[in-house]
Length: 134
Image (cartoon, rainbow, N blue to C red; front, top):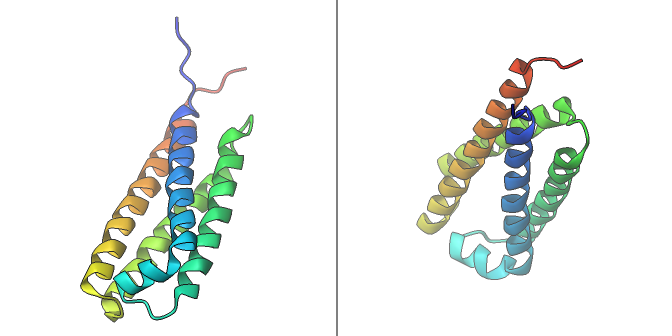
């Protein structure tokens, strides 16, 4: 009989989020000026700051996913931070400060981030429902 690891789904969700956050962060840092011009952002430094923050976030996700026992509080924090990103994206969209391309980019990224929040939430629920082994 095969034993199912109740943390596998959450670990994969955290690591997938980390990959997306790392790629996004590195892209924002490496191409801050052209991306800023494309999306209608006047100060490329904003993207650099966001990029660095995403790299720190990604490192935390990887560290938690690779632990022997996932820190549930940190996993919930990832969900909260992802939902906060989505809420902030809505504020940016409603403020109308970006170009049409920028608005589309923000909306698409917010959709992906929201998907990660949902996947991590599902992973946390699966862990909670898993039978306790002695």
